[in-house]
Every structure is written in structure tokens, then in C-alpha cells.
Image (cartoon, helix red, strand yellow):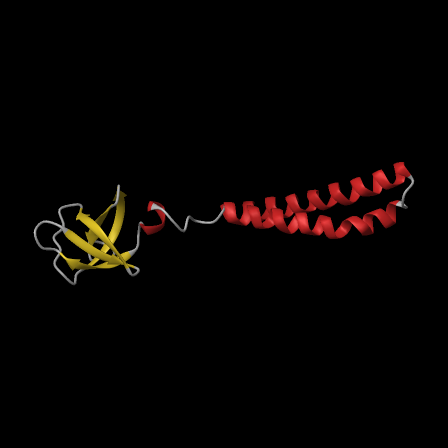
Length: 133
């Protein structure tokens, strides 16, 4: 529902941008006597199209999930590389992280874990199989 609402708002934003730019150009051209309103509208159309596409891209980017930061790694699965000495090291998507097991789980080297959250630069993980499939 949220994505469809964002899509509708993006379309309305594009339409408003085109109407304002083309209409404004036609109005000013008519008032200044430089071009006919039709000629001004044709001349302003590339700019209107550019602004409409740029605003649509901005709306799309604003509605995307973050690709960086703690929010992006939560829910990802990885493998335990080292679980000796009370410290856990995991590999998530090719990156090496320090981790801490939450919810009383126990992990060994080679176990699969899922990231449940982040505490500073330490991942909070849980063994896969506790309802995570």
C-alpha cells in the first residue's frame, strides 16, 4: 500500500512539474510577446521532462530501503568464523564482524547465524534454526 501511494504521489509530482514549467513558459512568452504560447510550450518541454524525471528519481530514492548502516545488515545471515575465548567473529556478505549472541544462544565455528541488531560496531546475532529457517 505504501509503495503504491508513493508511486501515485510521484506521478502527480511529475504532472505538476510539467504543467508549471510548460504553462509558465507559455504565459511569460505571451505576456512578453516573444513567442506564441504554443512555441514557448514546445521550447520548455525538454526542461519540463528533465525536471519530471529528476523528481521521480528523487521520490524513488527516498522510498528505498537503506543500503548502508545498521538497518541494512539486520536480518542478514552469516557464518561463525571464530567462537573461542568468549569472543565471536562472523562473516556477513564477505565482511568480518565482531558479534555477540543474544537470547541465550550458543554457537560454534561454522554455525549459521542471523543478525538481529547492532550495538555500536558489534552485531547481535542468533543461531539460525530458532524460528528463522
